[in-house]
Amino acid sequence: MHDGNNAGSRAAGPVTVDFPVWLRAAHWINVLFLGFLIRAGIQILAAYPRLYWNDNSTPGTEWLKFAKRPIPVDRPWTALEQERDVTAWLAQPGGNNLGLGRHWHFSAAMFWVLNGVVYVVLLFATGEWQRLIPTSWSIFPDAWQSVLTYASLHQPAASPGLPYDPLQQLAYAAVVFLLAPFLILTGAAQSPGIEAQFPRYARLFGGRQGARSLHFLGLLAFIAFIVVHTFLVVVTGFANNMGDIILGQHQTDQGAAVVIGLALIASILAIYAVTSWGSRRRPRTAQHILGRIFRPIMRALAVRTRSRQHYPASSISPQFLVNGEPPDSSEYAHLVAEDFSDWRLEVGGLVEMPLSLTLADLRRMPAQTQITKHHCIQGWCGIAEWGGVPLGAILDACRPLPAARYLIFHSYQLDMTGHPFYESLQIELARHPQTILADRMNGEPLPIPYGAPLRLRVETELGFKMVKWLRRVDFVADYRDLGDGQGGSREDNMFYEQSVGI
Ligand SMILES: Nc1nc2c(c(=O)[nH]1)N[C@H]1C(S)=C(S)[C@@H](COP(=O)(O)O)O[C@H]1N2
Ligand SMILES: [Mo]
Image 1 (cartoon, rainbow, N blue to C red):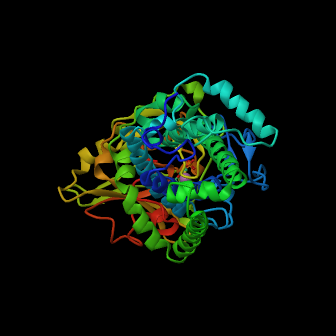
Image 2 (image 1 turned 135 degrees about the vertical axis):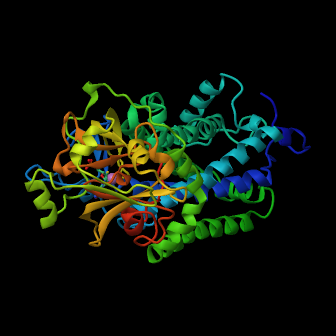
Image 3 (image 1 turned 180 degrees about the vertical axis):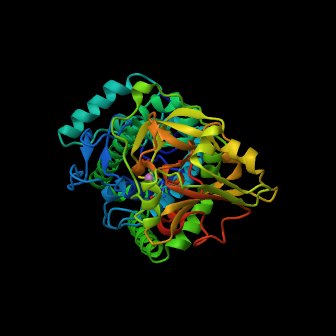
């Protein structure tokens, strides 16, 4: 094995193995953002605290659950009932807060990945990689020796010219080059945009639920590493180790290094506390500030990807979960009683030709069916066949004016604040290959729980964009003067993003 560049170029003996300042900085930045990721990840998990290996998310088939509340069998229920509260000691920001949890998770992911990339580039640019990446197979038997030494409650010697023993080296290399990429890949595999365009990618991980389960196991591996790493840092010479990771050496000023290190850890914990508290007090501000950090990626995943999903009929989910309760107005009850013969889809706003379409009118337009996977923001999914009119055909008929940039879908149903449920969609998405207004599901007229008589399907985005029990579609220049101005009922009330490709 070779000496590390730094160690080798110095006159001092093997104990003086310095840690360059960029490496120390990257370590602590990593601690900060990993903490955000873990905390916010727990928040996201709590929105549907059940893990599956099948993409039907069939109740009862979960391999792990963190919910005592059973799924009701004697009454209709909605997936949102399954969300649970988490203490802010564990989750970012705590409470029942999927929208903000996602904001923290994705914005932290951006900084974490950026920090990781800078770290890896410098690792190779400086030759420091030689202290991390094993260059001989003997690392495996050597690491086993380390295991035995630790098991006998002794500390193995550091490898010649290296700051750590073979087991440490192997563990660090595995975390940096295997575990971290694995978490990024399994995270990306949960994106509806990526899965819509590259269904085979998600299949590598066993589909979206497989990816979600593996992402969770990756979290457990990370936590196990952090626990063992911290334990060893403490028991194998805390002051020396703090010297290395704070000041880059442990020959001098160890006391100062310990004080600075503990202060740094305390500050990181204080940052979690303050940001959790602050974002729950001012959720709209948090939504806006954090949203800016990852919005371009979310938007690109939703708008630039194309859905090319063609699942076989055999993969249709036996039980497709439901979100949202059907409208309980007398107006809707009347429509149901008349078998929707009085129902009209009103199309208006910035169009040359406003429309008022009956179901029969819609059924005379071009028809399309598709078997696709539905990705709910909570984490569950399901596969169904949807049939209806491509939204592009509606555009051809109503001819939007050049100023029209968004479609607003209005529902008969009311959101949690008592206002009609609505969502906005970029006009580009309206002409996507699998964007349709569906009046059929699995070969039958669309059932009431799933949005009768008509709902939106837009297959590169998350489920909440797909408004059910449609009443009206308006073409507008901007969504900001509607509702609370965030782009839809869920964006207004639950702090979700307007474009959600993941
Ligand atoms: N009008 C209306 N549409 C809605 C909702 C709602 O609450 N109201 N829920 C959304 C959410 S969060 C999801 S995941 C899907 C669920 O569709 P499904 O019930 O057919 O599974 O509908 C979306 N459309
Ligand atoms: Mo959802």
